Length: 496
Ligand code: C2E
Ligand code: MG
Ligand code: MG
Image (cartoon, rainbow, N blue to C red; front, side, top):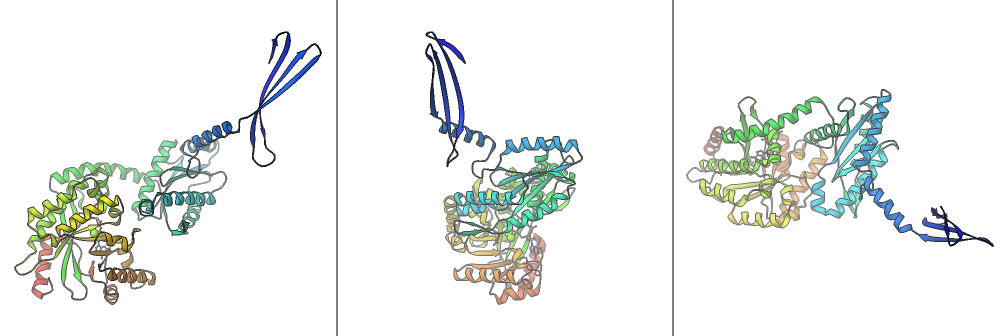
């Protein structure tokens, strides 16, 4: 720029330049002024350190496109890369994959070990994901415990399977966070371009659906999207409407599965398990509708009905001179969060006239590690009423036994996954034995779920497990059939 100032020609030139060969880079804004006077000209060079401003700009720019915690690309940057991948794929005959990766049971880790451990685990997972990918792939943190990976340039969809094998194996190796060894696994959903969708939004939606399928299939697995999943989403929506109507029309029924004391063979309880007599689908098992009922909140009124119905039925089990078997009712975490569980239990007991000691509530570890203080207070009040408490599916969560002791639980239900192969799998046997020993030392009773054979029962007897439930004794059965089963135990003198 040249201007005239008091008869002199002034040339002002501002340049921003980057310095920094030694150590840190600093940014200088240099203003160089040349003044022309009759004797000649002179120049002034003024430098201003603008490093801080530049760094702030760079940081803002970085954060627009990256996740602050893991420093991975964010959703926006991924979207951009995906659009490039579309343009590239369209020029040839290549495909690409978009994967949604969700950590299994991350919430449990976060809730039980604290958010800072959770955060560090996420950073470690991000690092592992990067180790598994090529420079051309994009790993993005979508938020929470969900990551997305874009794998461009695939000859076909099978090409991503080799990648998945490596990725999942790598993530199964333990993580060391805060001197704790944490293990996790992932559920992965995959959508392929152009087969499953033509843009970011539809590919992500399909990969999401596939990921939920992987979760439903028991986690630590992957699923490719297919049209059946779309149908499934439509079915879930229809099921939601159907469930509400089903509840109004009385289409639900409770089945009862006996629980026996191992040492004496006495029938001491029964678990109430819900079934849906669907007008077209026939008998629908809870695995198909409980999660839908939880999603919609319908589990709260449904759970209230289960409590009332189970208590009413258990009163019928009390024959003169006998206490009758205890009825065990499953509770969902949502009944604790949204419903008034104390009131529901009180009402069910009052309406039926059942002795509170004959009702057992099955809680899951996820209920207990949610909002601890509130849950603890509620659980304590339930205990004061005289009801019994057990922990369902024990061993699948992260809670320690001493932690459970705070909740004054009476019984642990050891998850079926440890029981199934107990007689042949030495690792499962070791776990079950240790759980029983620890529970005994804390004064807790134990019940094994999913006992299907005499061999398994014999092992449990040696380990001093108190009770068993499973197909070996009986499958869950309708109320009337259970009455007959109870009568035969009463006649044989093997009922309490
Ligand atoms: P759960 O509470 O762990 O119940 C045990 C499940 O294992 C039942 O499945 C039972 O039929 C099955 N089972 C019992 N013995 C054996 C065996 O020897 N082998 C095998 N393979 N399976 C066995 P079901 O009835 O399909 O219930 C599934 C889950 O649905 C239950 O798991 C429970 O979490 C949930 N559920 C059932 N009824 C209710 C309810 O009224 N409310 C809530 N919130 N959840 C419920
Ligand atoms: Mg249960
Ligand atoms: Mg269970």
